[in-house]
Length: 213
Image (cartoon, rainbow, N blue to C red; front, side, top):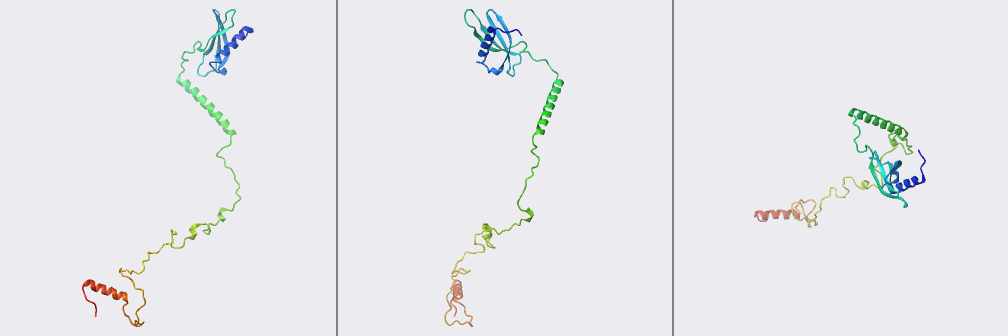
């Protein structure tokens, strides 16, 4: 490659500075060619931008005496054949290329997987506790509220088997008389109590009969 002059290096530096205003510096490749026509120097750089094969970063610089060089245009333009469709490749060949690429990717994954620990490998953990077969489960826990529930009271309410107490009323709806027996009612005599006499009198009144003699 011929040795570049100071003027050529200055133009390249000026062109790269112009491209830095429209694209990141890492997308601008090496200088491919430099063309001069009618006092305008065009510099073309390779592009590293994906999706643009055959395209060129193009910078036009004007050099007019006695003034300093100035940038006229800076843009990305297609090179020769960049806008043409690629040659047609039969499907069978493209399929073989695809299968070869998949096989290569699978081998690379297998090699990387050999270096990584297997997640399914069992890990031994030491257990210092008692033998589970020797553990006896009991219900003697003093903090367990279930132990405080008496037998026959499953819900712990204390009301199991209890019925509402209605003192003073018997099963026939009559008021009970729990008073002491009248004097003269001995142990050997089987005389009806006041409650029974009152009950008998009420039934006679209901049937219209008079009191017993």
